[in-house]
Image 1 (cartoon, rainbow, N blue to C red):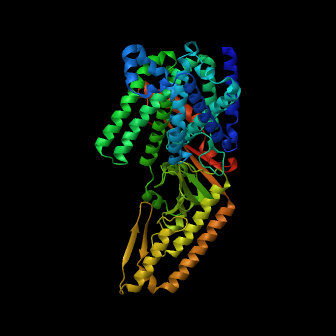
Image 2: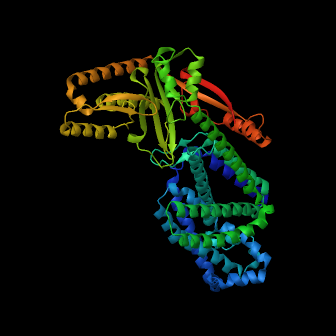
Image 3: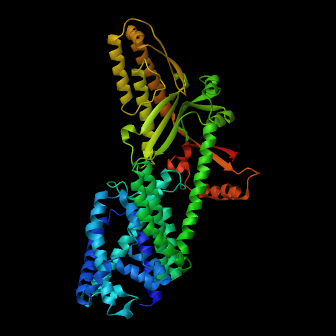
Length: 578
């Protein structure tokens, strides 16, 4: 084939591969393992065939003496040639990103038993073939295939390349998803393509961006050597970053002895820095591509994280004090209209500034206000029974609550009516549990099944059975409310009237909440816009006023993320300078 035909075929395969991503890998994933296994067995078998047929003495190359002689004989040219052989180990970096899809033991077993020995046999076989066919060095792999299995091997090689590309694409989606959860990447749509496998996701925006970049590189270079240099540079960078991060994990997480850390880091960097120094000579021959792409993504991620942190700091420092809320009284100085208002905020404690901005400029607020905070924790998953935390803000007659929804970075935040339904279900559950805990603070936090409630009830019963007669004045104070509570003994002495009052209060509040829910639920979203101060430097103005503003404009809005109906949405905006 001519070079143009090869490029066209490659572009067609790329378009087809990326166009099928929305179906998910679980539909065709059962084919991946047999294809890859067959691929490795074939290249290993062909390697054995070529070693036996052409020159078995190539196995001497496993001795490190020969690499020393090679560098001594080749000098600088031999050293820089290291940058051109990085394609022999590319793909290994995808293993680290794909660890979320497979057990560690499975990756270790597959690499040790199948991948590593088959690759050694394949490259040794090609070396043996080249000893007698030196003019075939450009396409030694296909030339070394026996004629009888050439076309089947060609098909398997193409399928294996597609599977390898799919692994890299899936790894990219996984990394972007985790960056989203940590607030280091603009909000994009994440689609879970499998009900069985949580890690199988599809990100449409990144899929098409990745496709355009791949086609641009393929059609722009038109040269396998330059693409190899670009890929090699990326792999070396990944290896260096992985080693440095591994060093931190060994020190801070595993608490390994410093001598062990020093040995690991020294041996790893000795090999990787050798390849990195050789790759530097290939920067102008295609190696600049991953550097430019990495720099672009670094700027995007850094600016987004900086802007997000500044927005959060503003909301933290401008929280409304409970004294101000209590000073407004149960009506909050406004008309309390029937219904439930869900106020979305990034704060897990306190009243956000956007709420004071809202009630200052509007004459009415809903009878029930729930501050909703969705948090992604740096853990794999959060179980359903621990997902929602409900808390009361202020006295009961204020009818103000907080609900914190917690997700792991692999959890799916369902963007449908179930989210609103679960919030209200947990709100009703909290009121019931609160009525059961007459002697405890009404601002205590409970999980869905009330583990803390049960422990507190057991304590009360035990305390009532063993405590002598006395009155104890208990006052339970939290950030959000200061509510006096009776002592357990005092509560025990007045069980008949207290129980009836608590039960009646519970029924009344549940009926009130139910009537407000039937009236309607309104979603109130805050839209905090940041601007660089006038005396800021030019770089900060560009980063905040242009790059961050552009990213905020094109990323998904909170109303889309939470699938808020347009007729139930109320946006409240404010601007502040950094």
